Amino acid sequence: MKIEGKAMQVTVKRTGGFTGIPLTKTVDSATLPQQEAILLHQMMAAADFFKLPSTIPFTPQPDRFQYQITVEQEGKQHGVMFGETAVPASLKPLLNWLMAQPAQPIND
Amino acid sequence: MISSQNKSKKTKSHLKEGPHICPICCILPPHMIDHIIKHGDEKMRTWVMETMRRSEQFRGRREVIGNLALAPSTGQKRRTVYDARKGERLPGRLVRSEGGRKSRDVAVNEAYDGSGATYDLFHEVFERNSIDDRGLRLDSTVHYGVQYDNAFWNGNQMVYGDGDGRLFNRFTIAIDVIGHELTHGVVQYEAGLVYEGESGALNESFADVFGSLVKQRSLNQTADQADWLIGGGLLASGVNGVALRSLKAPGTAYDDPMLGRDPQPALYSNRYTGPQDGGGVHINSGIPNHAFYLAAMEVGGFAWEKIGKIWYITLRDVLRSTATFKGAADATISVAGDIYGQSGNEQTAVRKAWEAVGVI
Ligand SMILES: [Zn+2]
Image 1: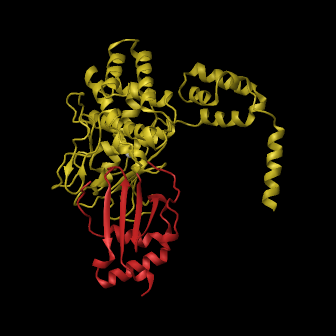
Image 2: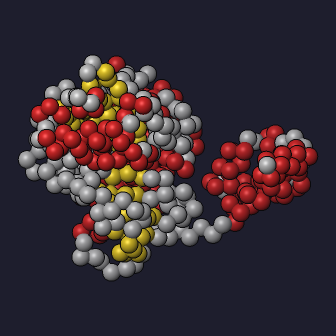
Image 3: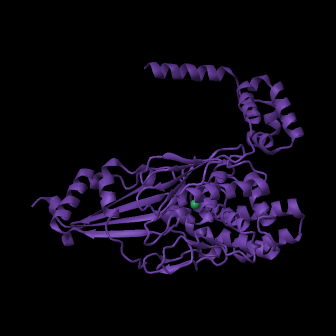
């Protein structure tokens, strides 16, 4: 089995914005329909996620969103933080897909 | 190679111009010169201009300032509204400009009317000519993105999303949101408060304060009649809450399973110190927001008249880009004394307000 085929948990946390209300979405590839799981693995590989820096620099603008994507796979964990104004092209498909997932109620 | 040679030549010729010594600069730092030219009376402006003119060494700078002083100041509102048609390209398609016919699109009219009301507050009450005080055109884009739950100021214009409809309605629905975004522009041209930590929370707070004043003035409300909410009507039906923030009672605007609970503190001792949202710029703004509310209630009447003026002058003339809450408190107290007298009602109200929120 290829390493990128192993189950992963992906979380996106959006903060900032005019509302200042954070939004978190978490996806576990093990519980996704197969097609979606494959797509997720492909997007992760395309972004070369584990090699991205933990912070991608951006100039703050009033009321813009910031995103933190965190991935856990096989005990490895990596997080990448970036601003709405500087979303890396390689991360755009993953971000859009994650943001389209159903939101969970806030519990923290 | 060519470009690096050019660069070194440029540096050399620049060096030849000699050190920056200027009679007027020795008396006044450059920011103050700019200030006098922007805000000083005719006599002060003439004096500054005359001194600059005599200083041959400062040709470049004099020209910059000369242009600034001579640039036509329209003293008129100029508004344009664009439609991004759910895309993210700015500004989008022009749909209404100054004096143009009302649109059938409610968001277009709200953006137009709201930016007009904001211009009027700054112009009629604070004698400020638009965001930059030089008649800058007010550009707004509506229908930005798909179900975009946000509004922002991008350094040049206002941008409004439609909301997702389930949690948030369209962002132009609340006039204080429009006033908030435009005030970010004013802050950018004045104190330039760095959007992080306490200066960032002050940036947010000035935006909320003047946003609320735009609403209060449009409704002709005194401090005790106002709701002091930011984003009233913005939460979709079914969401448990009245607005996004409350200057009157920070931390009470909403409490909902999907949105969580309004996290704003009113007291400095309860401030957020974590890393999110630039160190909680939308959280800790509750502290200076509440100080403004308390001072305005203590003085009474229309909040924009006295406490609003104190806050405006502080933003325009006193605060630096890295100001802290304590610095803002001291500055507003000092400005209150300058305008309304030392130990007068106004200064006492401002001091008591900052004490009540635990900043001083
Ligand atoms: Zn803001």
